Amino acid sequence: MNFYGSYRKLRDNSISAMIAAIEIYNKPRFSYRKECFAILAVNSWELLLKAVLSKNKQIYYKKKRNESYRTISISDCVSKVE
Image 1 (cartoon, helix red, strand yellow):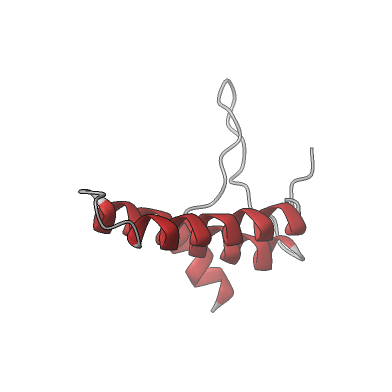
Image 2 (cartoon, rainbow, N blue to C red):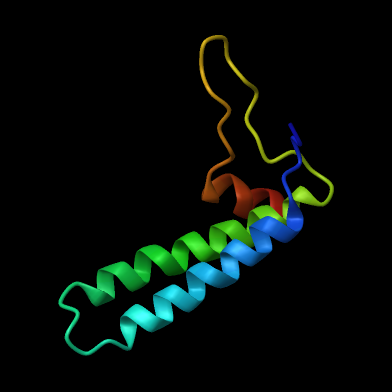
């Protein structure tokens, strides 16, 4: 397992999430579009920050016994990028 994450995969997923957010926002008959746009836009920024961090820092929390791996939160991403 790559504990630093795949920079290219995270970057590509970030671009895809932002494109999906814009496409949903531009649909005039989609009743929940503003909320969906906000969720996808925040997710896109989170993935982009993780892509930047993954080049030289670990993006996973320390694994605890009998738990799965977890990536760092968006607030931790922002504080580490600063």
